[in-house]
Image (cartoon, rainbow, N blue to C red):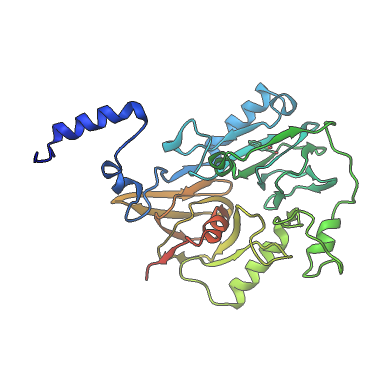
Length: 351
Ligand code: 1HN
């Protein structure tokens, strides 16, 4: 009987021979395929508004919202250049709409969130209802709903777009189409959705007009801020998060969108938070105030000092610590609902 040839040479010959048949040996990649803990290719990154804004305004001169369809500068993770992704699963960008402009109506399977960064007086229309934007408002475009934006005010309006584009691309489940008209017909008074669903009440024979997505298009900043302020005054401060609330779909109590979770938190003045890590990488938009985030993973460290309208990303399973001398308010979003639906979400809070 022959002794089996287990030499490196024999193995490499085996790999070469099977390669044309689209076969590859698991044992060479097993460790990387099933790592002992998440090892994201994403890196932490910070975009100061001071650096980004001039490019947004130049984009405003270089192309109209109409021609661009959506005039957006994508926040690309430095380690994922060319992929239009801020994490492996999430897209983020900053969109500019100037007075008098319209971004034409279309729809797509990808869900979108808007977080208003600068300016007032623009609107987004979803399913026949307009919502006026104010800084700090969190606005939803549910999957497969027609949406257009316009600016009937007198100032430039900028918002953060968060979409589940990489997830939908991963699943090869994307559809999209343009509307027959540039701006959709308004069929409901502004504020109808909020009146129906935004007051801890719901229509008696209520349906879920957008399925798994919240029927509230706009979660106004004034409300969120008031809640955080009261909790900062009257309730214990969390040692990791300060005062943090998640946005909810009032019909389910779950996250507002099936693919994205959203949060607003207030760090009290003098806050120096404990470290935590979680499997859902998160994108932050600084609403008010200043602070810092220290991030650590695999022996590497990052430190970002942030101010109003800055954006930063904390990738999966990176340990982060927030601090603020003078207090600040942070909006954030992540793909947590997907982790939870798959029962793979993990969070670790360091003592
Ligand atoms: C989109 O429809 C919007 O509606 C923003 O404002 C960003 C990025 C990729 C694909 C569609 C919007 C987008 C987008």
